[in-house]
Length: 224
Image (cartoon, rainbow, N blue to C red; front, side, top):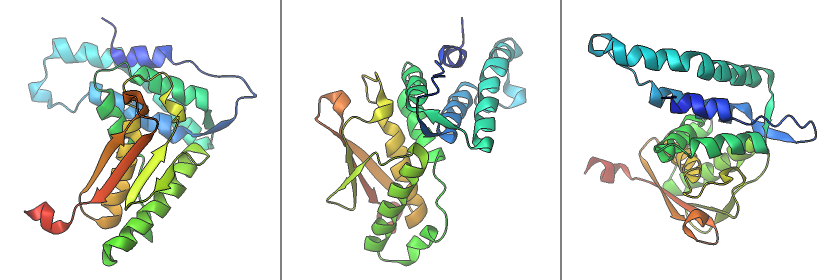
């Protein structure tokens, strides 16, 4: 039986049209594929391994997946960007997995590393923390995708979008969890505490737009 990760990589359609704009940072594809690989090859203690089961899994993944990951790493190093079609194809293939929600959520979190001075947020009142989170989210998404993809609405960290471009043919809305992960991690790193993000509206569920509502969990609630 062919491993799902190999299938994803081997079916990935590369858009080589030179006229296609390349605006998406290669780090998005790299992190997505690294998360898929890590979920398919969890860390296992050698003493607990069944060689007849785990060695074929490892050999089946080593060439195909690692080759594509190395290619993405090279793209990141060279500053190469991906086309919208290329990243949409990758998300479409990931969405075939039963754990696509978790893959996209983890990828979103892994794409965030809040830099100073934003990390000083914990010394400010919560209202300032949300202001910093909104500013960082706006800048970070434009950095990753080469354009503005979300609109801010009334609320601490409430964002909306119509037609998230990389959802492609995703009927379940799994790709939306990437935004959930990004928002959650930004709030956690700025507030230095837990955060909650709810995907309250989703076009995949029949709503007219997608919406995410994020909030910092006060330390008193976290400890209770």
